[in-house]
Length: 260
Length: 312
Image (cartoon, rainbow over the protein chains, first blue to last red):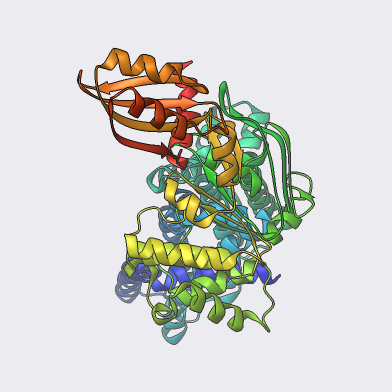
């Protein structure tokens, strides 16, 4: 536990003493804030038009669902931004240690590679969770002027935590495979995009293959969360994907010890 | 403290280290000497559990480096060739991190860090970010990192490389001060370093041990005989003949011109032919201008041991 905390706090410190955490948080919040505003303006426009039409034609104003028209839309774009940003958070975790030789310190210290890995993973995950939770402010604005349904919002955020853990585990695996951070970024982009879009080919695959392809797609599982459904199947999918990638990472790191 | 038995390492078909065996007693400093690419780093990496050996065994403090790696890792401090520094940390926070993962308890943490910084002379830089330090100070922080948990065994891979002469002397003093309480293995390709700091030397070349012992015993072991240098005035052939006929002389080689030759004379080990030789030369009417014994230096040994295989 002490070792885990030592690695965890070292990684957290490293995010915050370098500009990385601030730049990523800044870029992400700017983009997501801009997109949130655009979605909200769009919604306003629709409201206005419908209101005018209702006045002209007579009759009541049709009920518009704030969650469906704003929250879900917003979640859908945020997913994609994270897919672009997480590889930047994870790229240095192992690649830099390999490049600068500090991996030699870790490998010759009485600390297991699992402790190192978990320290790195949770440090990255904490940073991710902090940045994600900052976007809650947007929904506070919604609450001030409307009445969104908070259930799907919270479950949507829960989904983000699972999705983030999965993204991060993929990024860490890619970082462990190389000492070049650019390679690590591209590799994690590749893997994440593949699993993002993998169900596209479901429509022209056989029935069994289609099911499998849909099952391993990242989006499929996220949609349930964003609709307010917390399904154990989705939770298990994300958790098992994360564990699998982390397990592979420990194998990659320890493989040095097998090459006799 | 350290026992190495027939250690071998190959990368694919390339043999990096083969049949390396040596032992180091507690509290001594062992110098690991060899030209670049001889297999020093590979051997050290095996001792520190960073690389698994392809064959043979190594035990540190009685624990096998493969089977009981965690126990070994608790007991070693290791300074790799490239100091493993996190450049974005301050010296103090870096040492704190290292001490923690080396298992130093929180009660003694600050004391150990202060001691180590004192010993390596970096206390006044403790709040400097490591990337801002000069090469020499980075090297010291690397050394501090290896010392911070007061390990039984210290393994230092070229600890003085890239330092200026003054810093080299300082680092050597630090290392010398460690003998007694710590067992130290240090590698280098700089000869004076070994003779100045180490009590025992292992010379390694092309992945094999080429010589082993104290600096003096290595010299004695490798001496093929006593060597004299003589400057004698007189015709070369006649003088050469005269020297050769002296009892105990095994070999003579001549340099210089016809009248003023310099003769390198080898005689059997343990003999001293100077007196009889001098008398003979003077009696024959040649001018004896210089006669002195040549000591074989560590440098000669090193060169002989590491070039032999190339010639063979």
